[in-house]
Length: 138
Image (cartoon, rainbow, N blue to C red; front, side, top):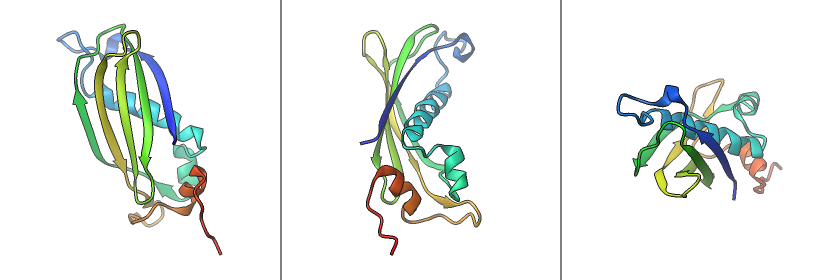
């Protein structure tokens, strides 16, 4: 299981007219923890490109439970839950102090050959190797 967690304090520039974190900034929060998780397996975006693949997000689901506010410390977790044909990552955003759920969701990313732009219908061997999955190269 590949998992990562980060803490982030909601900055003033993420707040909207209602005094809460604008919902669009939650995508940025997911990106921060996703990068942390991918770095754990040495498969961050730079490495992806170097191995010939990009992984665009093809689906994003977010359910907002409670608003995040200026100065609130958030704990954001990401967990890779599917990897054979696509990369599905589940997320949980909670108040770091109370552990109350603020938002939860997932992203789905598909492997695309960087040179041809063609989508791969299976995860590339290089990604599976980073996960420690067996790959028969013979």
